[in-house]
Image 1: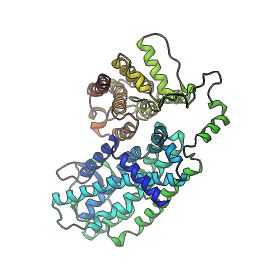
Image 2: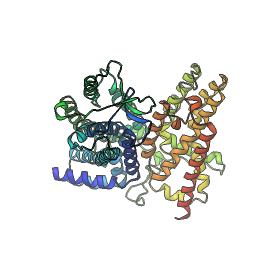
Image 3: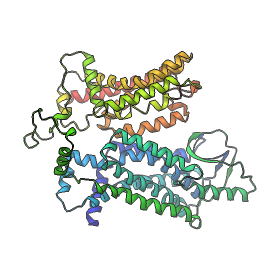
Image 4: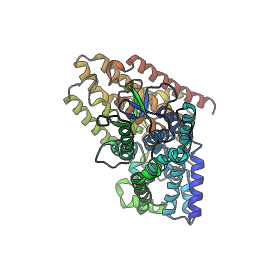
Length: 525
């Protein structure tokens, strides 16, 4: 049993590490390590200690990079960890595995192990980066491997084990497999990971033990500790006026974080395996029985039957999910058709939510350089934008569309269909901003409504899937609401944000790149 689980985990990891999303997150992880412990005079920090900065000992470098990796990979890593069960189902690998003696628990345990290998490989690269930074910086030539790696073992790895378990759980719940699941996890990440810094909450980042140890070092050096504040998050700060020498957490200080880590690992295993209670293990008979038990989801009896045994390979389509074709060649018909595809399965509740946001935006006056509802409204269309640039679950529809004479027209229809939901959630805040005389802020809102669908279209075209956009966009949004000037695509920070014309120009460049990529693929078929 254990041999089969290990083989499944290793094979799944080897397949996933070849995907573009893995490379993107790995590069982001290494870049974050360099930001957390910059070698030069960078103003960026991941671990803040009021106006102080630690000397680059093994313990300090290991801690700040481990904290940065925990924050980054618990969000970005979740995007590449989930989806493996869905891929097995769509590719037919799941049906092959269903014919083996591997149980449901064994299968989910293998996926959990694969996620752990995925995160472990990135943590090894990050730890190597931390060691290189210490040696290049030259603050301390003494390499203490235990203090360098202890934060990874006690803090980052247990937290990522919980993330790995949640990724498996989300894969077993159909409603959480798509863009909605990405948004649910983003909220969980904000509350549990970033909120872990607040007193009284679960100390998932080990901040209480770390900050207590640093306060002891500062007090021993004669520095006042009453006004010292700590934080984790990517910020730029010019207030650093001094340094402190902290050796890092030693084995004798590992009690609290170790206990939390053990609890997290135990919870991670339970979370990963609880899905076995309802996971069907790719049992087609069970799925058909479930559909017959719910007639509302069953195919229309009047629709022509499409038997899976007689359908061409890779082209088994469910007639109940097909959208009727509209006659005519107008561009508007093409855009509306693409919009119906994006809305499929969520039309009523999505537009109801957009209406609620519009009412809220109309009832709230602009506050400061932007509208308070605007940033949160730009999270609502994520499930729709995630479908741009690819045909998820569409069988061989992509091959059929490849025979169309105009990839440019098809790509433009795709782009405009993505812009319409963005305009739906930004129109009322933009009008309110115009009414308040804030024309730059209104223009920034509209420019952002152009940028995000273009980004989603490019990422979907590059990877043929939604994961890259679902991973990158929440990070971009988080940087925006934290007033990182270079990431403020909606102009919420006022004059510090990029000009709306510049944002619109970036949107045009992203859209052009996506359309060019589609045209090249069409020409080389």
